[in-house]
Image 1 (cartoon, helix red, strand yellow):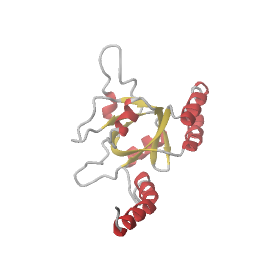
Image 2 (cartoon, helix red, strand yellow):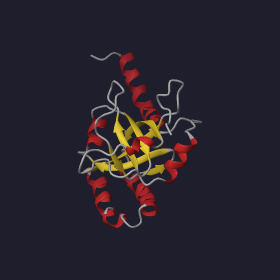
Image 3 (cartoon, helix red, strand yellow):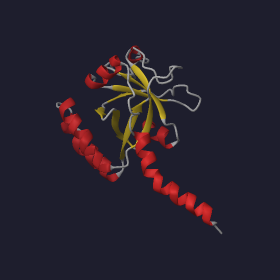
Image 4 (cartoon, one colour):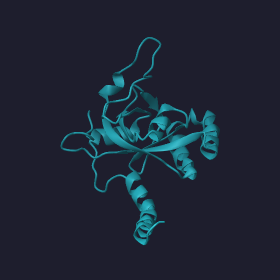
Length: 185
């Protein structure tokens, strides 16, 4: 049988959970990113994403993706079965983001590591549970990728609606004295 104290603690936890989730998904108040990183996020067509393993090492999975810079966060939509979504489902909530257009990462012969020369940061990843948020992201994509969005708008919208695609928010961490969230330029 559950005692009164445990019940009250659970109810307080449930009541505070939405506020804690919102705080975890929003950029830290007053957090300043490196100016070169901010400029790149405002103008670049791509970010390159790599999940960080629990020991802090980069995953071997990298990829260039379209993104929206919305309210201080990098927002992407991806198939629910991709490594970006699967790593988040496994609890890997930290990623390294590089910003810029450095060409495709995977090439016919080997890998293109040029993205590593661009501005970068460590970010926290979280799913965006509000499926209606796709409208915000598509509004950014309409302006940012006008020649390409026509073939993707429908599948992205439908995937967000049926759950075959997920929206992920990456919130850049503020630079620290140790440099864990620091941007590299």
